[in-house]
Amino acid sequence: MADFVLLYSGGSMPETEAEQAEVMKAWDAWFKDIGSALKDGGNPFTPAAKKVGADGAVSDAKGELSGYTIVTAGSLDEATTLAKGSPVLHGGASITIYETFPVM
Image 1 (cartoon, rainbow, N blue to C red):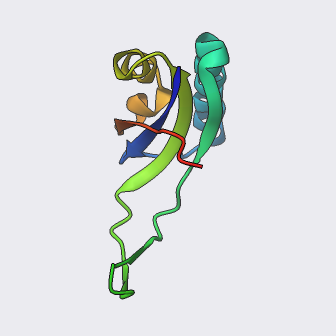
Image 2: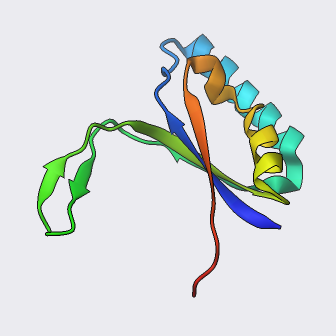
């Protein structure tokens, strides 16, 4: 088993309290559905972001990423299957999945 980071790009935030409640219900249902595969439910990102270059130069980043979740799965394909149930997709976001590995 390995950990996989699901990185969300784009999408929209719910605008009304009713929409927010519906979205939270969808997240709760997905978290329940994936069960023990959920390692970190994650959080959304604000649009403000900075980028530090190899030379130390700092610039504003485009804020392409909108949030993350971390899951545990047996393979990249399994993590991808889990990602297909993420409610973030209903808001128009896309998901990129990366496997992590321990180095320390």
